[in-house]
Image (cartoon, rainbow, N blue to C red; front, side):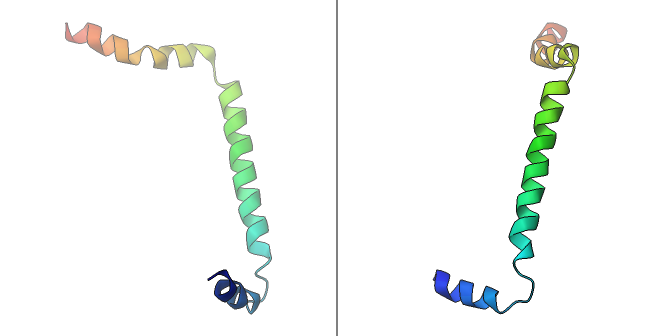
Length: 60
């Protein structure tokens, strides 16, 4: 099955750029996610983690 796909892809001019673009997109996405995670404010994380408990208090 892979032989058929590989043969078709070899006939497309400039097809080698697509794996590189995909790698760069995923790399920058995860670097951005990593940066966002470690620079997020601790107060905001604490506030969001207590949201399920505050709903329960407001209903009673």
